Length: 289
Length: 300
Image (tube, chains in turn brown, red):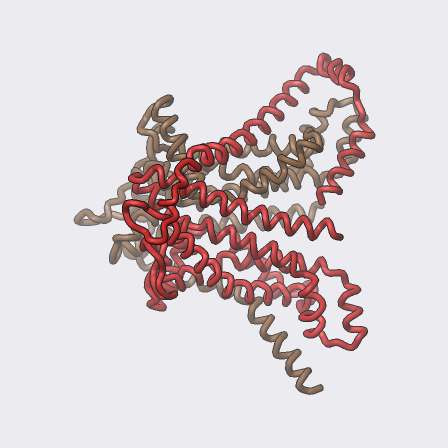
């Protein structure tokens, strides 16, 4: 009997320990990133680092300004949102309200499946199809802000569609019926009664999409051109924070390497802010609903 | 789940059965509604087209390049075989699961069976797991490089890659396992307690076995993520060609191999072939996962 009690307690302890690994993991990631990145930021100076437009780590004297990369990440993400969000939400509306059940049985698993396509495959597709298309028909070299926005826009579609659809489905049917009873058409009822009610769920999907787009690395490297510049047109190349890390980490040493890790810190802070706002949206919608 | 949705849809139809001619009349009065309807259909068609086009295009371009050379056992710069990369991927996947599955299941058991409702610590654990699932893979890669490769002095190695990936897939396994555990009816627990079993025995002998399909679906989902991962591996497991020899040696997985081919741009044909292999592998794994999950929900 006593051995059993000890075993029970011991295993409860083991389960508890495994449960706190996720806390330990986040703490470890923070410690390692900040410990290796903050000294570099301090040495370069936070304003020169975040606000500097010149990234020339191999020059003498070297300059480490990542403003171009921050702008690049923001532009690429904004482009992906402009392309992916309207189409994604409208597709979710179609799936939730207008889709014939027979078609739904095919489309729903298809969109779910596509969420799993590896990002490198999206990147390769962009490199072989979208980049040449832009070069031949729109102008520029091909690898560009536009190419990255299109590919990332397609990439975040499944996320946006999935989250938005379940948000739309969560709206009580009585909203729709009430609107119909007042004489509105089906479309008007969907857009004026159901969509506003599912606002916070859809917003959560958009924020999730932003997180995916800003953190995307390998696909972007292949198609964004990677020039360190603030793009003046959508066919110009850009370099994102993520691309900066992967492109130069292989051969960097000393302060250069630390500056790349600090680039990761900036990215990490962006992501933490997105995660926080995501949780704020969630807790607010829980309170309201 | 799908049945419930279908039922709901047929219910809606029963309430709002409008004849086609009636609808046409309505659209004549409210042309804006017709425009909105067309926009919705157009957007849906566009996104389905984009996604289908992507897959079909890769299959059409890649399948002709699936030559026996591409699957040769030995890698050299002529055949750019992806076989060693496939085997490396399997090794890294197994190693990652070996680390992540016990931790993920243990954590889920604690959250679902032991933790009391409203416990502050549980809230923190959930928040942290959510934070983990939002961190982009390149940040995991950086962390893995700083922690396992540099601080632990493992160098670029399969082991460092597997540890990095196991942190990455931990939230996936935790969440799906917890859902599977919660879905086990309370009567199972009561029955087991009633027969005199303790908590541990109840969990191991009753709850876990009936939650296996759900856990399996989550694990397979995690495998899909591992196989498709690039950014977290490039500076932890490295990109050495050829078969790994031991867990401390560096080796490229199939996804990394794909990235290298695409980036070098020298072997376009083989890159298309490799893209097909990778795509089919990941989509197959994910289909298997959702198939198991569906089977589970239809049983109930």
